[in-house]
Image (tube, rainbow over all chains, first blue to last red; front, side, top):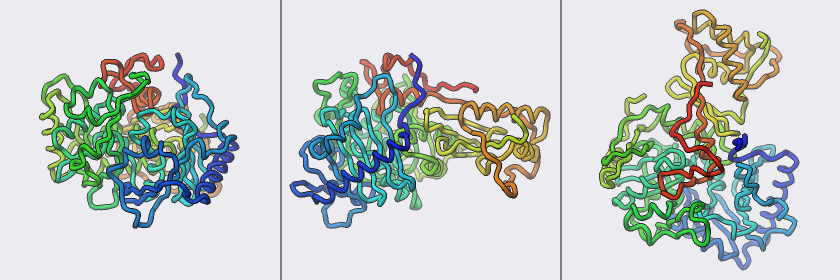
Length: 370
Length: 160
């Protein structure tokens, strides 16, 4: 089979994009006009920004929002963003033709489009028939599902991430495809593409009494003296077979149910079981890029900034539709401001915790690996 | 390729960032990414500063490097960049040519053939799954039958 040329997020044709944006704004406006009658509102502090999430269907609270439980806030503050969640009952019938059956031969996860100003933006996921839309005012957003039954388990672990990426970057906060753990003194980002070892490293650190900010996505704020990590999700995703290798976690995970086990990971919601270890924000002390070894002990060695950026940035850029030069520059700034380390992952859990803690406890000076 | 042909970086599809004198280039459309160092990084930085004709870029290259085969080396490199869709033909700007700050203007260095290193591993992982799939042995073993992809390698680098 020849690999398709297109990956990730394909731009829409201009005519289709324009019509799609108009439709999205209509649906959002209708939801705003109806004003939440019969609906619910929940408030979250996402990377320091207060977000209001409005929805009517209980499905959203049960499946989409638990990964944000650790960020729940009171409703007294002014919101920087309002996200409306819409299910099939709130979508016009003619909307469904925008959701073709996924083509197993195509690699594209979906399509994205922007208006002429680049302010209003939409992403349509063909994998599970959803779309995310941010209006031109940058404050009001829509997340819609035409068929909740098609929502894969991995989406429940990192919900609304495309909207968060768009909304946070307008405040200079960068969503990264990286795990984050820490100690009382500071935190480290753990980068690398899927399968590099981010989740297992983060979960072994969690069960080794370290603080935890996420296993797959972390927001980074570069505005202060130290770059700061900000947790977005208190969830974790792991293959069911790997749960056995991290004692004490299984009870917090939901196993894929009635689905092909190979296609879905177990998703863990950690807010209840590990509330004291969940870290909402922390100064970053370094970046770790893992490699798996057959050795017993884990260790860290300085890593060049170029190599760190090469392993950290592409997956972050390619996972978020609409990411571009501005995002890459922020990632470049991040590796210039932090020490970068190769972590060689060994089998001994405590050795891994010790190696990660060592970097978290450091003063955060840049190493000389150049 | 004529001396008067103009080139520019194929934005916004192509993004690049320079660290420690080397450049990482990412093609957001297909997931490929590239590493450029030495003369390759110099030429890329020249293009990032402003679009330019072949002759203008060659002139700037001559101001920073000395050696034989510079012109053919530049021509070959720009052809590679164009073939990878990292740069595209551009229209000449009316008026004065853009003022470009010379990066290595203090002393000329020996010219070596510009080399671009290409990485395709990220495309594979994107194709597999937006998160990632594993095989029945679990983490960290990737499914080898995922969309008929070959087994993952840690890095698939090749000289383009």
